[in-house]
Length: 369
Image 1 (cartoon, helix red, strand yellow):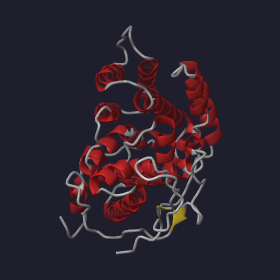
Image 2 (image 1 turned 90 degrees about the horizontal axis):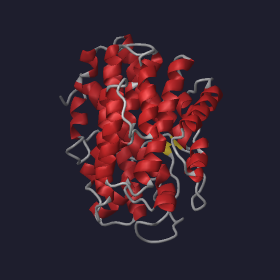
Image 3 (image 1 turned 30 degrees about the vertical axis):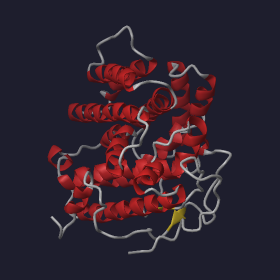
Image 4 (image 1 turned 135 degrees about the horizontal axis):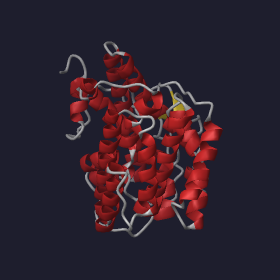
């Protein structure tokens, strides 16, 4: 096992406890970077569309969304495909970010109110020809995107995106219920909650749509492929926690974060929890690489492109996030002293993490099943 060495010298702290600001850490991600050349056009079209949809009325929130670089996020996570489906994906990103910021993270919406909103959203996605007088701008925008999806997707792909949206919206309600709880969830519950609520399910469901290929249902249901898909959701969600915690604390006082959940479970300070989080994250990244190589040995063209698309999403998300103004806060460093990337994982063990909800991922490795 490689020793944890990247965050042991943390001294840039301002307080003790869950409000402690933490410095940025480098990431282990051996997937090479790539970016679609249409980044600028994607972002321009998406921002123009977002403003026309009036997803938010708060001027500060609108300005924050305008600098999110949705085109850069889409171009880095999906550096393939035609401009039409890429623009659709970029618009999806804009709606999900607006929904997350304006309705989930930084509002007083209760779980009951959010359940009502997500139910209307799901009805708009399931039946885009339906109409509800009380629809929010988010539901209206997603209804339009669902109609647009039919231009690029097969009926099976439309169903997969719809099912993925159901996973996402159920995660939002679960998240909202914890935000009204005086305690934080267990690490095991948090991992399941956050992989659903971060919105990665619809994003990975769009990989084959944007790429213009199809994956057989038997391949999508293969436990190894399902594990790789969930690992992708989890890596992105944990990476988000590592680089966005300072922003969330500053803007929303939000401690529903892997760092703070680990603090509660292990009764430790944030800098110690950060070491644990990086070790957990890197062990999952190592598993992703091993399981990807295993699946690619026997994959056909469609499955190969999907699995490689999962890896590109993990890398592209980091390439975007490490330069996005959305996560720049006055109290934190802009980048780690040695840069954003490291060559070796903090933990290269192939033993499952002690989390029952995800331990089955490691069972998919050859020699274990």
